[in-house]
Image (cartoon, rainbow, N blue to C red; front, side):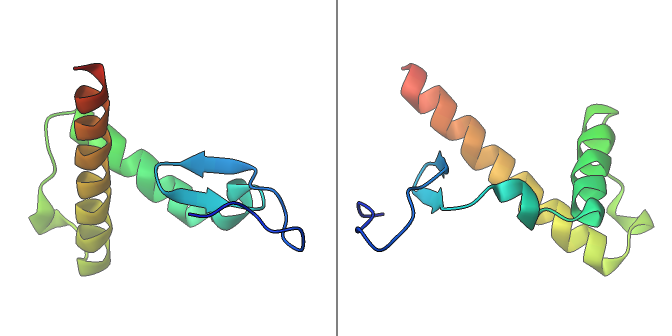
Length: 80
């Protein structure tokens, strides 16, 4: 991630090494938001039974689980 040049917009959202020059909300579809909410509810309720999910849902949940694990690891690493 480099500094923005004069011809580029200023980043409006930064997280880790990711920078976005426009509101990230516009990149999130309602279907994606529902998938994240479904993942968090199932996780909080005691786990996810992957056998009851479609292949698409399993892939999405695995990506979300990995991203959450990385986020938690970064938080605990910065707290030390």
